[in-house]
Image (cartoon, rainbow, N blue to C red; front, top):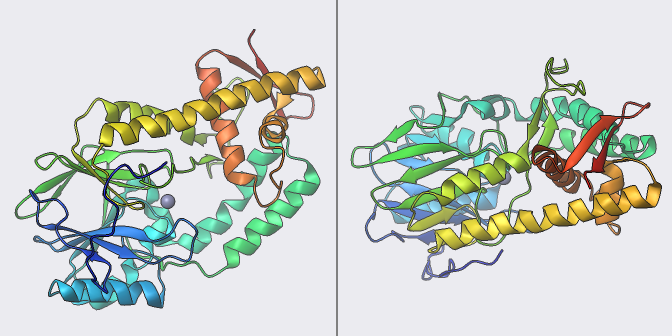
Length: 367
Ligand SMILES: [Zn+2]
């Protein structure tokens, strides 16, 4: 999804990646652009220059990112030791990354995040390990063949052992939808926006019409939506298919976008892709992005059922919709999308779900 407004070119020679006061009516807000090693490009974090001095997100933990953050704070006359609070939009490494480093410089610093992300922030590496098993169980029930599962799980375990680009940190306060983040001169409202992660949150400055969106809405991409069985082992008692409790990112993401569409914002300050001054268009584009993919997945389901002459698994649909993708390295987020879309279609009464003799969940379109 393309940025629809001025990009982040106005740091005007700042070696610090600092974009000073981009919102004229709210000069306390500054954007800081920090490098990441990923194709998505740099991450944009925000400094609220009020009391307490607060960062929204922190960038990855790397020497390059740290140097740019230090230089940006320095340009504004601050040091790491002056930061008193970090509010995290979500736990991913380019957001959580440097929170613990900041705490080490500023012992009074508090880190706040949504209550569903606390464990991730406090024990990132252990959580990555713990999620291998529920993902394997989910993929097995989704019809992923055993040989692919074995390779996938080996890949996930290897990834879990890699040094993450973040340090875990203690969470001092957890937030929920409707909570407030108070400052001396302003107040931000917390909006829980699940989809990309379970506890993703947005921060809303109603007086300035500003919405900090993290990865929920971006200028250069639409986020993947997460789908997983939760760590709780037991099936849901009221689920006729005896599925484990699960997080259904795509339906939740679309519901969140639709509720945002009913509100009025003037500016979106995202974590990637500039500053967005047409919020309605950005929200609509993200909805459209997934509506088009849900249609493709619905057509893929019908074609796969026709081809095999039986109800088909999410994996069968994935292969049909993404025939060129590699099952090990390119399946995970796309299978999350297929699962989310099939759930969304089932919610709409357009798809029936059953369990076959092997315990695999299989889908049929309603004619
Ligand atoms: Zn993210």
